[in-house]
Amino acid sequence: MDNLCCFPQLSGGRSPGGSGKGRSQRGPVKYGFSLVKGKANHPMEDYHVAKFLHTNGHELGLFAIYDGHLGDSVPAYLQRHLFSNILKEDDFWSDPNTSIAKAYERTDQEILSHTPDLGRGGSTAVTAILVNSQHLWVANVGDSRAVLSKKGQATQMSVDHEPNTERGSIENRGGFVSNMPGDVARVDGQLAVSRAFGDKNLKTHLRSDPDITDAPIDGYTELLILASDGLWKVPTCFPTFTCPISSFSFWIYNQPPYWVRLGCGCSR
Image 1 (cartoon, rainbow, N blue to C red):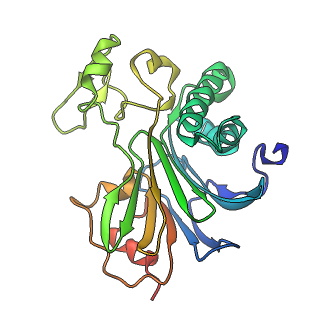
Image 2: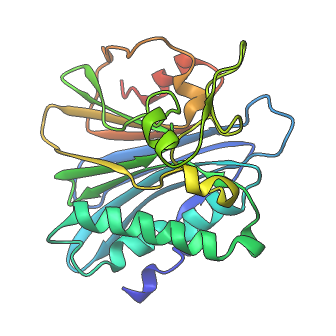
């Protein structure tokens, strides 16, 4: 699997805007992505992956959002190396859960060891691996989110890692959670997520181990959406997907400004 290193043919990258799409060669699964820069006055710090590849007689769909902060070096590193590290694990095909967890931790250690080159920033991550269009594995660190629609009902596949919900872990590591009026909760008064890649200055108070879930893909599965927090902080609840879906679809968003952009995921 040496050709997987760095993923030279992946659809992905950083962009202030743009979109794209593709589909499986073995099944009805389709994907699309939309990139929209938010209103922040710094450059785009989000990267994505959207690609099908074939290896060891299997087709893998690889999809991810990496939402960076304090620079784009860490999400760029994740785009190049995280999936490669997962697939290099010897037990990936027999034990994907353990392999994904190991690769997340190993990738974070690599980032920390390259801090002089990558800087002091960090990144969240939500990744999805679709095996042979039949089984889905989702992992995440931070507050980028994956939501799956089955029979029109939305189910969150990821876990939001927020300082208030993981206060005990942070305080046990010697950190604290600030809750200033008009601001979100922050680790040590700085970071608004309790788990992240990188962030070496805060790492003793942060975690980088992912939450991992999996699900079979069947005829009732309609849509998976991956998006950074710029999308999910707009609504106050999950939608019910009522639009007709012709086949299982992935849609990947980097901070679209309006919730109604979810309509782009409908195949009419």
